[in-house]
Length: 117
Image 1: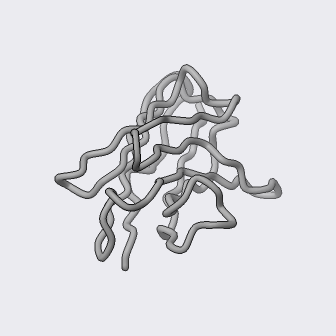
Image 2 (image 1 turned 90 degrees about the vertical axis):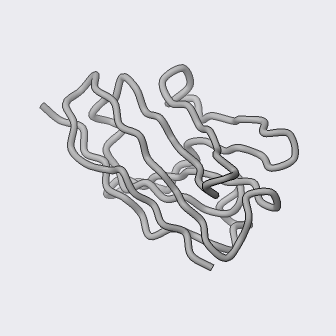
């Protein structure tokens, strides 16, 4: 099983990035997929999640209205579209095979997002 996260980088405040998490060895049809982030010196934060049963989406308060999670079953990929980025969004972003970090069996390697001017 492999989760490959990509799409991170450096952007200026107000700009956008799209993260991708591509899965191999498992199918999205069987897993809720979550995005998490961790900034230096801070605890891991739940960013967003999409359920496999009815594609319900969930967002953390800090990203509501700015981030959008979506999935492409044919590509076995989950996306996180991040708009109106703020410096406080700077973190390493991880995807995982559950909406709850403690329950996730599989994790991606993380992709760095840096928002600064």
